Length: 145
Image 1: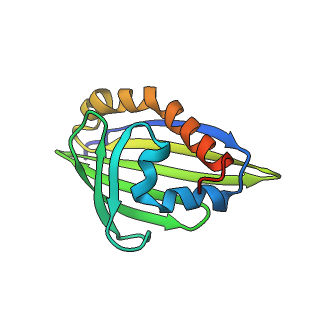
Image 2: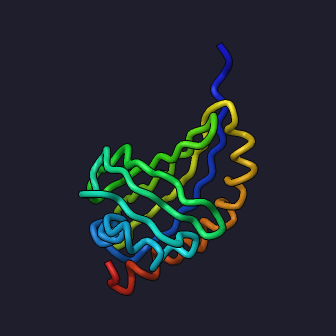
């Protein structure tokens, strides 16, 4: 069997806010554009739980269907978006220590066209992840959650 192709990018930031505050920002999907400069609009139908579906419109890209495939309140969530012959997953993890929370966002591409989409989309995401992380940090530290 052929080995599954994949590409992975990630970025982390330390935030002077609790994991619950940051998670509150995550759970307000329609407000993602307020802190993520790369999101034009986002929506999830129903509660913020695994299995929920919706749409996300990135700046400069087409609107895509998204699905929450993992949700652990106060800790993490993962969003899946299907591309032709490729699956793109966005991971969001929170690790709280004394007074600080480390937030890590990652994007992975898997499937036959993973390398193609990794270069076409992933490299751009890799460049913009720090701005997204800084937006999340500002929003959480300013109590916007």
